[in-house]
Length: 167
Figure 1 (cartoon, rainbow, N blue to C red):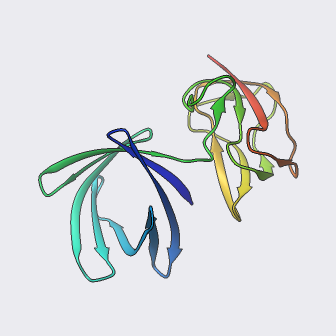
Figure 2: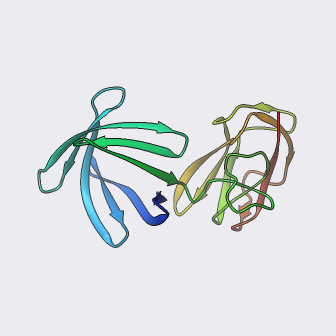
């Protein structure tokens, strides 16, 4: 999966893929192998490929990730490039409106129909992009009042997916 990490006005591309029982994480041009274990509701254990191990506290609020490590508090926004945007805005993933694909892909499955009431975070469709199936979720509570695609359709970046009328 590809993400963008934003902190203090700077952006860093992040790629994460399964690697054995752990993950290969690419931060910008640097790549590391990690093992991440959830040891409590907010407590995580991270082991790097060289054997170095860290315990940290992680709390997520939407796209914001709050991390406490060794007395330092860090807030990082992690943005999924497949997140949906509203027509006419640059970054309204949390607003209702016409939802668009940010990357080209193929609609694997539609999980809603016109007239369905949806809640924020509810799965709307499955979009295959970059050889991975991505669960596209509603950014708001609302009603699906228009669907522009069908299962099996290919969609270009910026292509309209559906419209959620915010309640």
